[in-house]
Length: 185
Image (cartoon, rainbow, N blue to C red; front, side, top):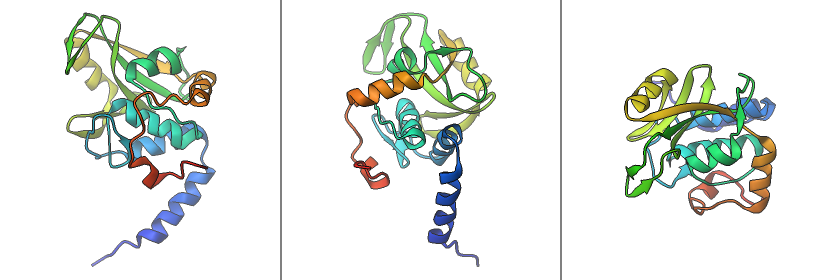
């Protein structure tokens, strides 16, 4: 029987991660969340919601900590239209009609879901019951049938830096996050 030597494996992962550029680190941390349960308001490798998964990947890739909603990411952070495949990108799902959403009410034009890009046409979709790698077309088809439009946007690094400087952790940080990151570094 084979037994994985996790310490050695993780040391190798650390060395590989340190050599990566920001886009590869973003993708790596999205993939690290693969199979994790959906957790509303969470942003850690054990559980996250859609915006938490993207915020966590941004933090791991760039060291810039924000915690906000899918709508805020769409309107303030991922504002580059027609991004290149070499950009950090996300898919945003924007409702075309006002109405009940979860426990609240949303207006038309509100982004209620986000998924980070892994590659052209492939996303990490953190949605009930857990985070999965999906084809964008499959997720888009579902949302479009339910009154949503889809927008692909690239990261505006300056906007992310500004929000991080302002301490934009609008919804508070998940306490589990400190188990994985030295928050003072």
